[in-house]
Image (cartoon, rainbow, N blue to C red; front, side):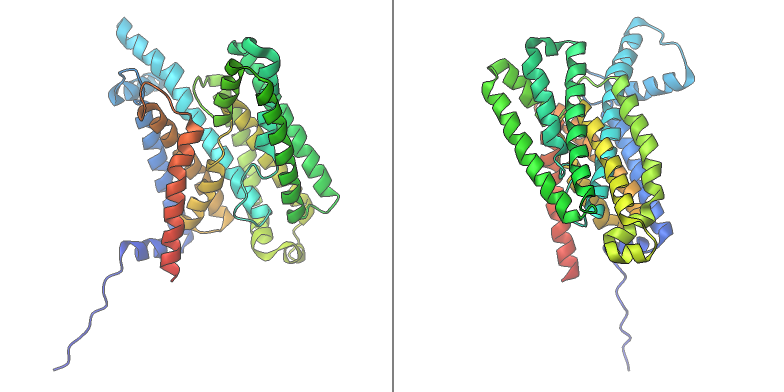
Length: 366
């Protein structure tokens, strides 16, 4: 009598891999990630020092959608706290995380190096120098709204000028990736040293303000910042997504093969790098230095959905927004009533997840 050996049913990991081999499956994963991010964002509205529950957050959102009156004074106060304080904070986390993640995908693909981030061209160190210079120059006047505006302008101007200088130099060498990376390293070292000089000459109060800005935070987010960053991302992302095919050619085939396919490599690289610089510079001018999300979000998305930039770009935006919302929520609760800057929490959460996914991928391939 012959026994029939049945093949074991595929596990969850094998089923997931089979799902992400098709375009429909990848779109399903992106949609599921977007839904999860939306649910986490609504939950994040109930996180904080004030005793505002999830039902209060949902009722506030519903009231804004339906334009219903608040009722009593207590309800009006809760709705004001949710809508004016927590909703801008969560939305800024979402759009900032998405912008930095998409910028990270562009840098890694265009420079063909998975270890680079939006700060490879020295954008963050230049912004830190610009903000630090304004903080030292204005001193205690940075506490007001006008002082915060000057800090944002200083960071943005320094980041844009530095990045423009690097891209202009790289253009003389046909935007060679290795040249861009080396120029970025040189610019990073220069502005890091310049910022250290400013910190060395600052008093303790000014030094604390500089340190707080450099760790990154979405504390005190206002609707104006959400609108500016969101509008920039909304205008930039379609332009980037439209060039996903050219980005695939440059990232996977190399410059020569991409040129043979009809891709204007130099113009495409400088154009997309310019968009990545704009996303990064504007975002961190409002949030401060939030560095890890631009590196880890594209890697997480790539490990989960593959390297095709048609799907990697939107999924990285979803992952980046989710990471920053979770990091900010954790920073508000772990040491309550103290608030841990989101840049610190982002690195503490993202690094273990990043290591786990890399090790899991290595185990799967051995």
